[in-house]
Each structure stands twice: as C-alpha cells, then as structure tokens.
Amino acid sequence: MTDKAPLKIHDLRPAPGANKSKIRKGRGEASKGKTAGRGTKGTHARTTMLPGFEGGQVPLQRRLPKLKGFSNALFKTTYQVVNLDRLGELFPEGGEVTVEALVAKGAVRKNQLVKVLGTGEISVAVNVQAHAFSSAAKEKISAAGGSVTEL
Image (cartoon, rainbow, N blue to C red; front, side, top):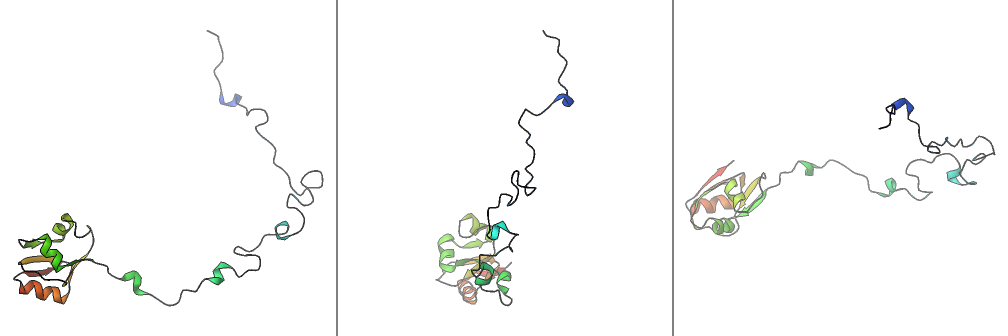
C-alpha cells in the first residue's frame, strides 16, 4: 500500500485547455475587431430590431383580428346530458336514479353536472336526482309515476 496524502479540494485544477478566455469582440482589428463577427452591413450588423419586426411585412400582431367586447362564454354552465329513453334502457325495473348510479353505468362522466332531457319515452317509475331537468323530462317522469329531485 502506498502512503499518499488524501485528495483536497484546493488542489483540484481544471484540465489543461478546458478553460478558454472569453473572446473580446470589437476591440481592434487583431481578432474579431471591426465588425465583431456580424459581417458587413445589413440589419443584423447594426443595432437590435424591435421584437416582432418582420422586415417590413405587416407583422403578425397587426394581421390578427383584435379581441372586441366582453363574452360570457367563460362563465357558461355545461352539463352531461341523459335522455329519457336512455334512462329507460339503463333502469328497466325503475327505482332510484342518482348521479353516482349513472356514472357507474357509464352514462355520464364523474364530477360533472348532469341534466335530464325529455327525448324519448319512459314507462317505468323512476326517482331521478340530477342537477337540472328540461320541462318535458319533468312532465314525462311525473306521468310515468316517478319523481324529480334537483341537486
């Protein structure tokens, strides 16, 4: 076993040639002087351009239409819809119809609002709990002997 001193951080040095000195552009004609690596003439040889400048072509921010006015579209309520004929298929014996039961049977996605619409007919008595109902759906469910509960 050789008797060497342990390696110390203050003894570490970068490998020869690993650290190169920074190129000093524009400091005389000896190297990278005069044009400083920018070539001769032209826009890029001079100072910077405005962001978005496209060489005189009408820039993108002027070609696009402007947003005008206020829209309530961001605040609209969207529902997962279920029609009465689908309820009749999913619950042929009637009974309780909840949002959780509809999610379990794959009729709607979970964590979404559910609205029951009146397309089709229903012949069994169902007790439906949902977030919204169309007036036609309420009438048809009541006529079949069921009940409607809004959540």
